[in-house]
Every structure is written in C-alpha cells, then in structure tokens.
Amino acid sequence: MSIKNTVVIVTGASSGMGVSIAEHLYQAGYALALHGRDQQRLSAVAAGFDDKSRVITVAGDVAIETDRAKLVAATLEAFGKVDALVNNAGIFSPKPFLEVTEADLDQYLSTNLKGTYFLTQKVIPLLQQQGGGSVINMGTVLVNHALGGVPATAPISSKGGIHGLTVQLAAEFGKDNIRVNTIAPGIIRTPMHARNGIDDSDSLAGLHLLNRIGEGEHIATMVEQLISNDFVSGTIINVDGGHVAGHHLG
Image (cartoon, rainbow, N blue to C red; front, side):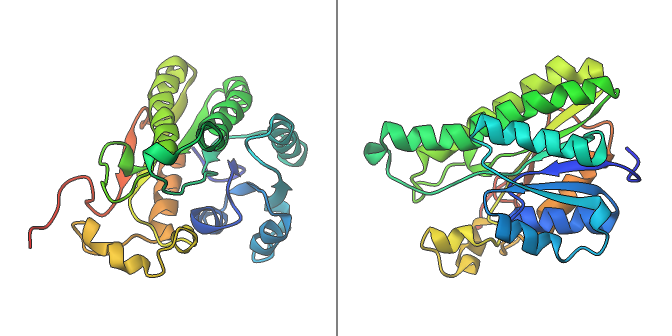
C-alpha cells in the first residue's frame, strides 16, 4: 500500500500506544482520523502535527453505535475514503474472577470486543469498494500466556474474542484483498499501568526475555508494517520482548 494519500483511522488515539501510533504514522506521511473519548487530549495530539490537512479528530466512544457511525462519516467527509483501520481503543484492569460482575464483563465486551467488531463492520464495505485494505486489531499476549498474579479474566476474555475475530475476518475477506491482523503487546510503557497501581513499569521487565519493557514506538512501527505489507493476513503478532517465548531462570 502506497503511503501517499493513504487514510488511516486510529481509535484510542488520545493516550498511550494510540498517541505513539498517531505520531509515527503522521511522520511517515499518512492521513489520519484520530478517535478517542477526550476531545481535549485528541486536540493536544493533533496540535503537534504541522500539516492540518492530513489530520482530523473525532471524539466519541467505540462502544456506542452512533459514535462509530460519526467517526466513519467524518473520515469520509474529510478524506473521501478509508484505507486502514487501527482498532487500538481498549480498556484493561485486573480483578479477581470471583469478584467480577456481569456489569464488569459487559464493560470489556462492549468496548474491547464489540467496539472492534462493529467499527470493523462499518469499515470493511469501504475497503471492499476500493479493492482492499488493512484492519489491525489490538490484543494481548495474556490470551495465550496467562499470569497468575494478574487476575484479569474479564478483559482477557474480550481480547481473546478479538484474536478469534481476526482470524475469521481474514478468512472471510481475503478474497477481497482485505488483510486483518492483530498485534499482541507485552508490557508497554503507557499511563495504563499507573492507573492500575503499578508505579514503576520497569519493575515488570523480567517478564520479557529481553529484560526490558516495550515502548509505544515498538507497537507503532509494527502497525505501519501491517498497513504497508500487503502479504500478511490472519496473524497474531506478539510484540512482547520474548514474553511468550520463555522465561529466565534465577
């Protein structure tokens, strides 16, 4: 996929990995529709970009149908098309299984799984019309490599659904030249850890064979690769410093 005139929707673009993805793709030359729940923070991200003709911001919640429709409509109004969708928006917080309520689970399913599912449902017909494109979802290595000290069955269940959705969408729409992949991050330096009570993210470095945590740029560069490489589809790509591959002894 040529970078010139390539339009990418990025959800969850107002903080954490979403900011890194937005900054990296902008610097690479893409046109961006940035989505998040906080317009002020979205505007702050966009303020760092000189070429305002290549960036729009749309505030909303991916869990809400009217907000998803607004995002797609605004992107089409600004750019006339969509070439790639980065389903980065998501929530995550640990809670012991026996304490999870139905409302807790619904929250993760609505934002993480259903938000990804139904926004993708809106974008894929646009990709079909123009002969192809890329959908990139955000999962987690914890789907296939659980940690006993991180009781997070609710968010991980929603992310597991995203992993399964990715493979099935790749199968259904490969004939339309639509590529669907998921990035499964390890521990990445984001504000989420502090919100979950982890003041020193680097204390988790030992979970990775590289003995360091990842940065947002590690995710952002993989996003760009999956947008531009037109022969990768149906994959769950671990960007995790070796988290899933193994552990150190001693």
